[in-house]
Image (cartoon, rainbow, N blue to C red; front, side, top):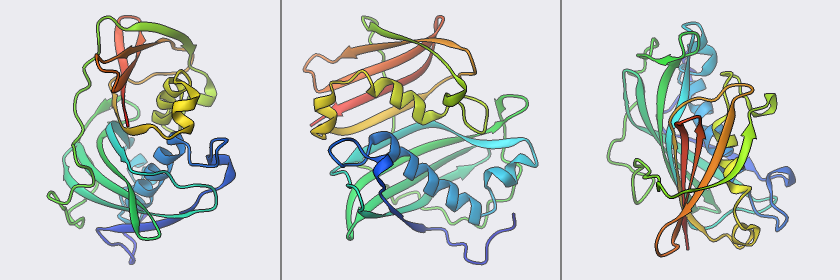
Length: 248
């Protein structure tokens, strides 16, 4: 698709929270929070001419490599949220994108995301084949207090679950969708902590893709003062994903 005449380098999009996106207490699930952030990023790439459809002409797609989310509060059922997004950096095969979520003009979520251009046939990163110079970059306008980082995995981690990757876990790029990793891990968190909204922030590292029928193991560890929980997902002896939850 060509660049939209309505294209702007900063995009704001409204979403209404529906009941399928909520936990039993009526507040937005952390997984659906990530989905809304990514759908907004996708909407911005679409009006900017670098969407999945545009990139598939060159067998390319954006894939998420790292993501940090800082949460002040969660929206609830029937809230209308505004998600605002812009690009901090974009060069060759890599991009850092900022996202913020607002309710009634008040910022409640900030996120920093790191994306890579991925060749969906060769299954490897490569330089973006489409023009992107029309995007104004905002390197100093950060959406989070802290940037994303490499998650350190505790060698004394405990194995908590074995999982097979099913068709329902896959996305349009034919690998396990990034939100699925988060969902698998959160299923092993004390439900009371989730319902009480005790998550202050979380960070995810996506290291290796997973495909249909892959067998994986989910591991968990706590830091010394119990202020953070780390999960990792391994396939054989390779770590595919890491998640660090920071508690209030």
